[in-house]
Image 1: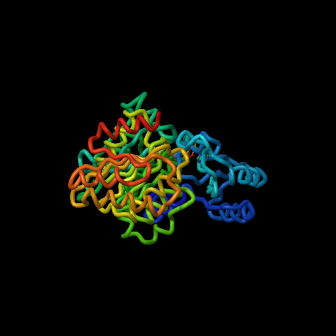
Image 2 (image 1 turned 90 degrees about the horizontal axis):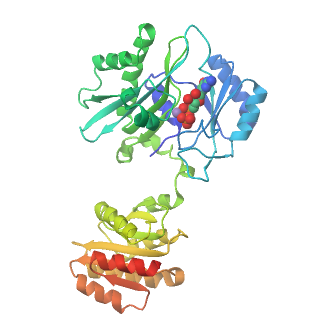
Image 3 (image 1 turned 180 degrees about the vertical axis):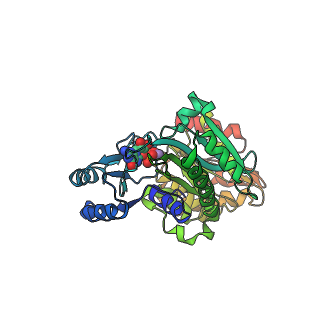
Length: 397
Ligand code: GDP
Ligand code: MN
């Protein structure tokens, strides 16, 4: 589950990490009250308005703007709320902004120049440890830094049992070129950031930029956080943070019926059991000249009810020109799956108006093929992978 910047910052603040402070608004109506509260709390002179959508690169798309007066603030908030924000990380249509975070301006002038860094923590699956990634090149796309100047990105593996050790936090602050108060502040920042990441069971905490203010305070200006869905049961309080408006409606529905579904852009819907087979099936579709419209793993039970739910989900996508069912029958026997498909088809009447290719392999595959071949619907059977591929090519042609 992905969080908004303001939610990620809330976790950080709860663990004592300095953040660029702010208040959330979904309507321009209360903007003056919010601004007044923020001035009282922080003493800020200017304001930053930040679109709250689940995508980065907001600054580039016009979703982060500085306002130097209350009049300007009102105009900027009015402009940003309701806009379709297009960033390098959204689709071409962009994402509608429903909320903005109004923050204090933390790039104020002072004894030294403000400096931006990059820090993120994620799981390194190769080492089985948490990994802290950091760079002096903050504020920019880290992908670009990784491509053009990979030597400017540092990595620190953190043992999950020991946690981050003081020498590691010091090494990081040193590599970031800090000294004096800023150095100490950074070691504290890194340690508390790691604590936030671990205790929220997150899979990603990306802070870009981490800011050294002109008076040497280290703080999180941005926060991109992904919580580990498998640990959400331990954090009931975060469940209410789920922003359904940010999630794909078909994916929400799939979660409700317990199907593992990811929406994609292609024209062939697929229904598969097992994530590995789903991947292979998507490759097969591509090789047959199609593009997968989704990833859908029906899991261990492919009965009529689940098959029907899966068909309904796939058919919501108007781009789908054919459906490929690719199921390996081990404990779920192929004949039962085939009957499930026929029953689902029966129940759904005319709502299925595209060809379905069914490849069933495994226990009772022959009987299953017979069931499919005998039914009066536009369902094509296949036992071999290649057969299924040829049929897709045929129906797409
Ligand atoms: P992103 O574009 O989605 O990554 O959003 P960020 O929260 O990282 O903000 C984008 C950029 O806005 C930052 O890199 C800063 O350059 C700028 N910015 C953010 N906060 C402030 C602020 O308080 N004052 C000023 N002047 N600029 C800010
Ligand atoms: Mn950012």
